[in-house]
Length: 287
Image (cartoon, rainbow, N blue to C red):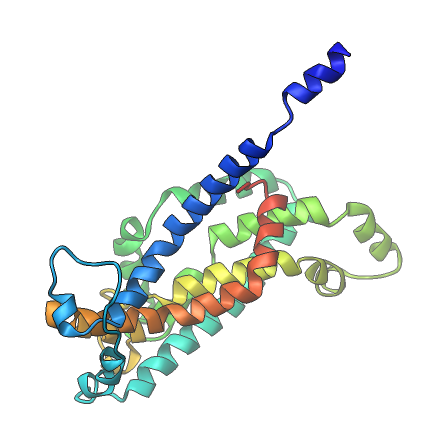
């Protein structure tokens, strides 16, 4: 009886469940609030935008902030479609190449028997300590020496050797791809390339979808630094930022632009969310 009473003592009660889910809901609302505020602000007319302190609701919603965007962007030297193409091309091309490069590196570190693999992987993961600003000057010098300044390559090349992609895929591969499965394939005559494409890659679908989400989000929002000077190579977020420079009178249009730019990453997240949760659990990253 004493033992059973002890178990009942630590069982979560109905009140505990209510408190637990209340905290989760509050944190969820806090996370969604920035998106909600962007949408509400993008629907406000000018007189409501000028109210101080700002209100978190809209009395007279309007789509005028969206309707004026073509007029605000009509005087661009380059057609808006060019900026859209640049952003889509950079995001999609970089995502595909980084997935292939990250999975190959993860396969090498996880399943190969080469000497120094663990040390090399540890050295690579230390690159997570360095941010983009730290690497800006060395990258510019390298790009200048290679002669690729003011080309698409300055967007794509730095994103290919992604430390995060390699880490997530390697951890997932360690947990999900059995060595015995690869050994059986080797006995049947499969080569390294065959094992990688026909066995490992299908199992790696959750990790691939997770990397797809992270890579697409990062590259969709990328803006040219000091390496892109041609207007024809600049991205959609860059040209959209010019609208936000118009002051408080354009804050509604600025929020409308923010909502539009958020739609592609949100759609990608909706498609990949279940795979992201599975990958994070397998990689030792708990929610």
